[in-house]
Length: 329
Ligand code: A2P
Ligand code: 11C
Image 1 (tube, rainbow, N blue to C red):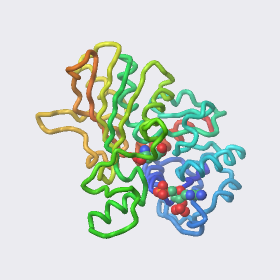
Image 2: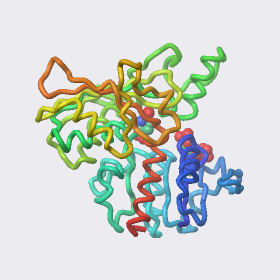
Image 3: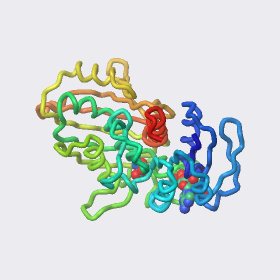
């Protein structure tokens, strides 16, 4: 496969290259693509130096697959140009997610919808992916009615500038600010921009994307998204009300049998998911599984994953693997 990574010099791009190599993705030629600022720069992949190229040259090379993580504007402008030359684009930005003509895919849940005709495929938001990975088997069994989620998101979700802000604050250095306030020793109830309804864009992604992924509008999700001074890994407190009652040991069994989900849940040994443990792992971790004692058929959980891995790069690479193994590219 001739594969292009668009946004190769960015935070997700860097993890993308790591994941492609680790999973032995069948790459015959790798095109590393970034902005004009980076064209000509050399990057290494599996011990080989590759020169970064621009978008127009990448389109002209007609890769079979292009994995985009270069921001929504770049995706909106360039994904259709790749699609027009026959490339299948897997896009990490929010540009195409809610477009009714595009599929929003978490391979473990809904990759079977994909066909050869899907030339632009959307990767969901990081905090959505880790939540739906855990909700999917439970929804199938007990039918969700309503989800209340509060997130504790790492600065890596914002990008390099935010990671730098946190590092500068820790080192006591004055530098450029990615957030309107200090992030060290703080918590900002503000992820992405505010919308007219008073919610942030991140909160609305959590509310809307799961319905599209499950192709089901019979349940609702409400969210509060918070940025905390963690370097890698998003955490979520998730409260789910089901139509049907559940048995806690059956919930744990169902989750432990779910591919890509690891149950870490033992209060006796202080075992629960944490970003420090999920960092650099492809799985989604769930723990603190307990019944909400204030309401019928309702469950509380704590879900953690590496937002740059399953939340972004790993999920995109898994979509690519699905396309190849099912002859869709
Ligand atoms: P560059 O490094 O040349 O700016 P991050 O989200 O970590 O900031 O990374 C964004 C990625 O998207 C980088 O690889 C960046 O390249 C790339 N990028 C940003 N704007 C463009 C653009 N207009 N065209 C192509 N790539 C872009
Ligand atoms: C964050 N979820 O942590 C964001 C990052 O829509 O793909 C990814 C933004 C997106 O702030």
